[in-house]
Image (cartoon, rainbow, N blue to C red; front, side, top):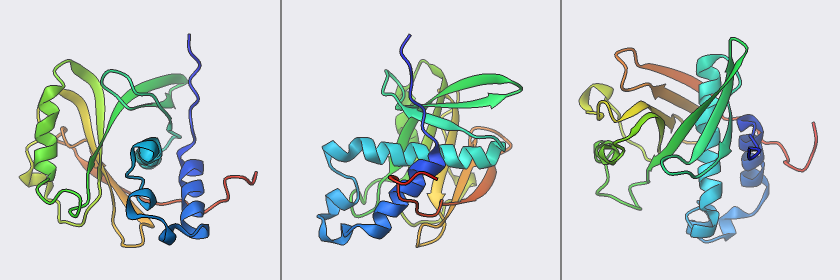
Length: 191
């Protein structure tokens, strides 16, 4: 069986924040700075998976780790321990991109695209909302019976220091969990 290398989301996010704060990213083209090139796609997905996993760690009160693993229906595999048992959850990463990249897109339009997942009852979908807008959870219509859960992760402050995880939006008991983006840490230094 293939060995999967799981990552600690706090360490990944702290390393990415260190890069943002210590390297001259402002000198790079916008697509590169924002991880919007084909060659940087895995970095964007790693950041999104780390944000979701870190938020889930706060929500569940236990460490949730992740591994990028593009399979048929999912981009990442999250893992956590519950009552002494190691559990694994397939996660499909989605994004509502900034308005400047696609002004026609909306969160409802993104949710409607989930209808294509017909045989994905175990799949968790994590949406990174990457634009400013007011989300009224009562005015969206998530698809029912298509995927196991749908979660939303979004920054709540302009400096990206405060975040919220909202979900499961398919459940009648949908909660918001607030968490902080980890402080910068040089990824080459050992703690």
